[in-house]
Image 1 (cartoon, protein in one colour):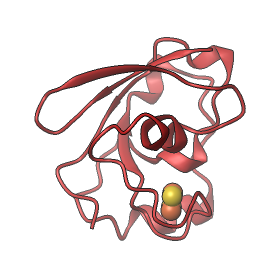
Image 2 (spheres, rainbow, N blue to C red; image 1 turned 30 degrees about the vertical axis):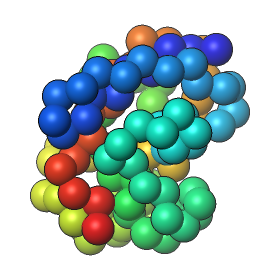
Image 3 (cartoon, rainbow, N blue to C red; image 1 turned 45 degrees about the horizontal axis):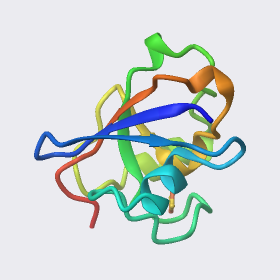
Image 4 (cartoon, rainbow, N blue to C red; image 1 turned 135 degrees about the vertical axis):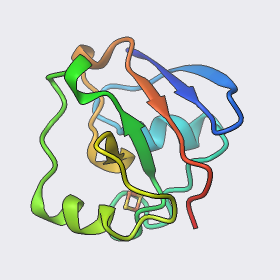
Length: 107
Ligand code: FES
């Protein structure tokens, strides 16, 4: 299982083993990482899985599609160039070592 490191808004580092085929959102929620909510369960309808990912470091990440782009316009914390919805990032072996920063607020 790929190791994903979450950095909470308070600076806590939490490295978790993420099951293949799940999502970055589930990897955080299933491991009780604070700062990830995932209210809609991964349907790209709530934006409470907002996170910041260095896409340049991980070209295997899928591009932001139209729906994700629209949802990212409504995040509780300000969107940046590194903003993604964690539920839209499916865990693959290529994501080994991914570092995900979490925003200060999801709601
Ligand atoms: S969990 Fe709701 S948009 Fe990702």
